[in-house]
Image (cartoon, rainbow, N blue to C red; front, top):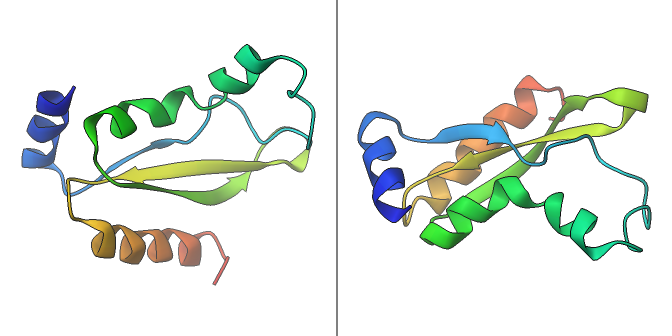
Length: 96
């Protein structure tokens, strides 16, 4: 996984993808089933395993008006650039 991310960052400064496989859920909605709760984080696991930084940013809304998150992933030690890129996404989404 580390090698796959390293190769991706040769051609791209950052990667952009969904933070979760669904829109946000109501507070407490998934606490009764730990597996369901864990599966909500499945898209964040690869970059965590690789040890690279990532940041999640609200970006629009989906079903029921609930927020949708996107995550920016970057190579090691790119936190400052990730914060700057996340700010650009927030401004594009009208969160400024």
